[in-house]
Length: 194
Image (cartoon, rainbow, N blue to C red; front, side, top):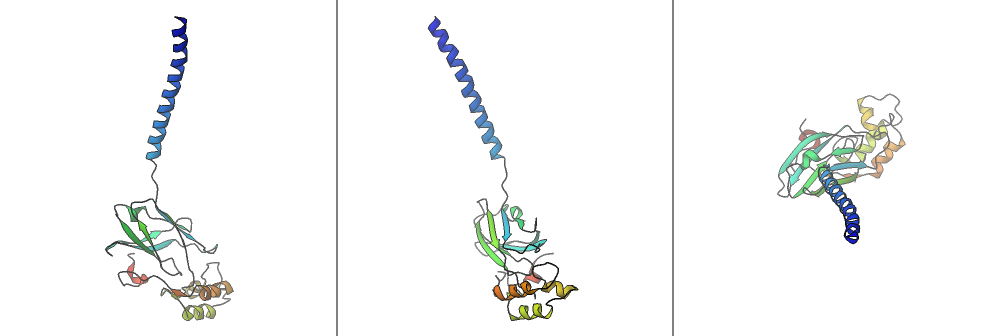
């Protein structure tokens, strides 16, 4: 009789511990499954003062159909929430984006996967034509060392530090190139819905 009692004294606490562990694991798995992950694009390699507030985004599916074309807010000067872009989309997507005064870029993603992307921005497009070339360099050079920033001088202040300096000029020299063209063949200025 004593032997059976010892068994029960050991079995009952062990069963209670195992049951509470099982409930804890089930509760934790349930709570983790409710966490929603946001798809996000983070702009990196940007000067400290550069803080875009919006970015035009264009998304095409694998058949090159435009499924999203809007201007999206930029959070904390660098994060673009792509959840609205990714919701309801399937398969491979190409996301095109053009930060102000930078070359347009594109990235290919799988819509079904949680995505955290980082993309470097290439500043230097002072003229807004999605090309960093001699025209941009001449434009910045014309406004070099401007102390009063009107709208033209602000376009030449590529790093947005409040003045047109040699750094702005060097960005037009270092980042020469042509940005991604929009697949709908519109310019970035006319193509984004406002």
